[in-house]
Amino acid sequence: MTSKSPEPLDRDSDLAESRPRGGDSARSDAPTAKLDKLREAIIEIDQRHAEGESEYFAEASSGPGHSLSSSLMSPVDAPSFADALSLDDDEPEDFDASYAKAKKTAMNMLAMRDHASGELRDKLLKRDFQPEAVDELIAKLQKSRLLDDEEFAHRYVRAHRERRKLSRSALKRELSKKGLTAEIVSDAVEDVDGEDDLARQVAEKKAASTRGLDYEVRERRILGMLARRGFASSVCLKVTREVLAED
Image (tube, rainbow, N blue to C red; front, side):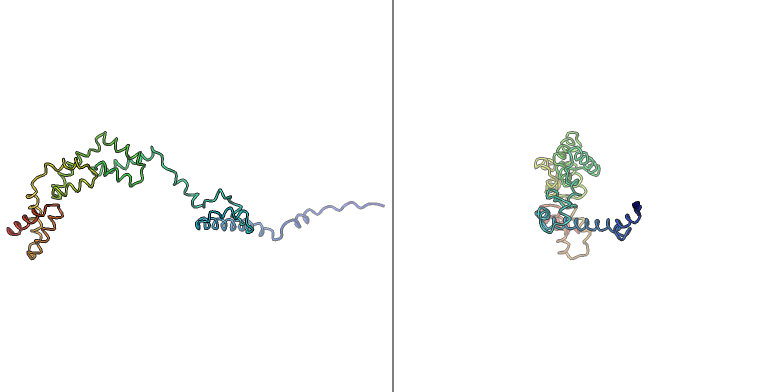
């Protein structure tokens, strides 16, 4: 009795049966489905984190409704993706880098106009440079005479006395706003004199621009101008009446 030799395997038919039905369509849909699930998980993680559910991750990994997000992240990895992207921004800038940026900014400011030390310090701190870096920079600028509060005060008084016709009290107020000490301010305005003459210049200019208006209107406007320049009330009244009487 002759035995039949085994029939050769039909490799093509076996492989065809082992492949999932749908062929290329099934393979192309798989990555898309995974990507959709991943997106859903990311949205879910960020939403839970935004709502403050810090225990969510621990519960998700053990609860009956174990979602894809719990398999992607452990409780230790709880921060949201938005937080992860901003980690570099939260790292403090080192001293040297902050000092270099503060120095460049300060030099640009000084090139525009003179500054008092306190004024420049406040501006730099508002730009979030390290306080230690700013303090060291201010000290070096003072040592090199690029910042000199006494010289600044005297130059400020001369310029604003001439250009804006400010009284002594107004000058003292402006200098104090710059962060200068009371001693430096007093010394800068000590030699300022001629308050009556300066007030008269202001009053005459205002009287000329209000000519034709009622006396009361002119008087009120001149007095207001002198008061804003910081002149004493007695000086304001005296000069205003004299100028209007002569006009």
